[in-house]
Image 1 (cartoon, one colour):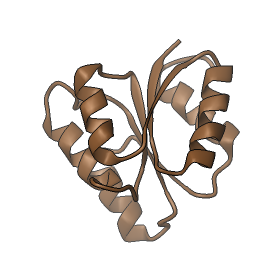
Image 2 (cartoon, rainbow, N blue to C red; image 1 turned 180 degrees about the horizontal axis):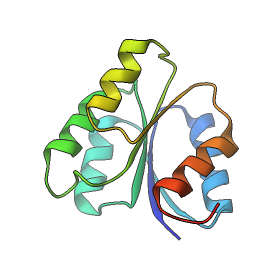
Image 3 (tube, helix red, strand yellow; image 1 turned 90 degrees about the vertical axis):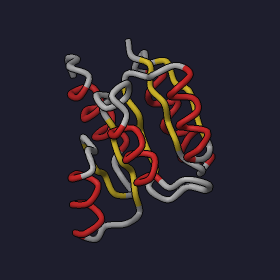
Length: 123
């Protein structure tokens, strides 16, 4: 199916996401901080990124901006996951190029459906 990068510093959440995505047939790589995510994406661009908003070294919004500013990565769909539910946070992420914005806690099946829609796959 698709190559997906999960960028999140919460190991329990990563395990849940990885289980769900691999169960749906996707190949998953994991980055524990924003800088590691950027390095991994530059080494091998994924088909989609699930990006936590609050991470060490570089935040999710910083990673999002870097990806959207680079012509080589600007078309990669980005699903932002965040505990921040404020209107300003959501609007800023969408304006910066996020394809989706889901707040934590989220419904794993909803995330999977949104990912498959972004990838143009049948749900």
